Length: 319
Image (cartoon, rainbow, N blue to C red; front, side, top):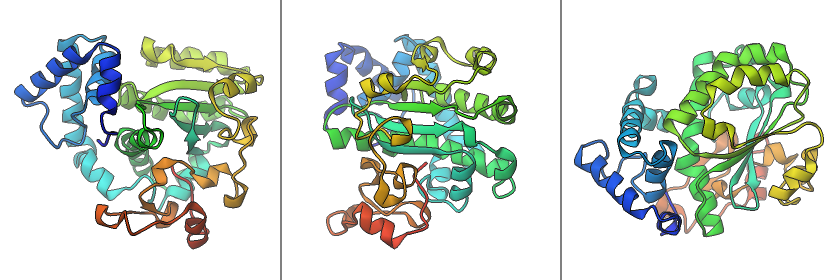
């Protein structure tokens, strides 16, 4: 996992947890649970994410980390590293279908520098999606999207703001979302929450649920038991009067106009298509024609967002 220089040290030292982080990492190495070069990351922020998830209990944190490493090696029969090589979350053939049937996109950062992830479940239609994308392939897209957070999205925001950034801010819009759609996604949502909590702990810094419908009380009573207490405490459930709260946390220039902000990304056809954010640095475009830039090319290749969009007019957003 990439991280900004000294960013993990800054945040861990400031909260007084450096000693236990050092001890935790040493024990993971000594017991062969962690090795240099492991893609999960060996930096302080990664260590503290697992410690914080288990209230700094070394034994429980170590067991959580061990289970995560086992999952990373075996998931989907090939492991997360190979899956990420095979399926770039910025670029895979079914990306457009997934985007149309389950809108989920990154767009700029909040006032703390955290990446913003917007999801609009009112447009969710799994029946239509699975005519173009198999359920197995869709699940893999969810996995690589989760992996992109610590691997690319969060580190890019930290580099851009030149300060520690450890999590994302999710805005979930439920306008038009009903019980029929909830039953479609229920098992998939439960699996997704489990993966996030078990294998990507503490990557979600905050979740704001906006336009919660009248049926949400029932939905919430079903969903809440799936979530850890710490996750529930990060959730703000709002109705239709949410703009003031969002603007306390997100600059109007970064908040899409559809949610009460000033950003339209008109030149890209809308915020949902722009994928704007520091995670695009080091990539030649995004969407169907996105390719990663090799380290040797980073100094010679400089494709701006507008140039990239012209080159890839049919490109879809970053998931």
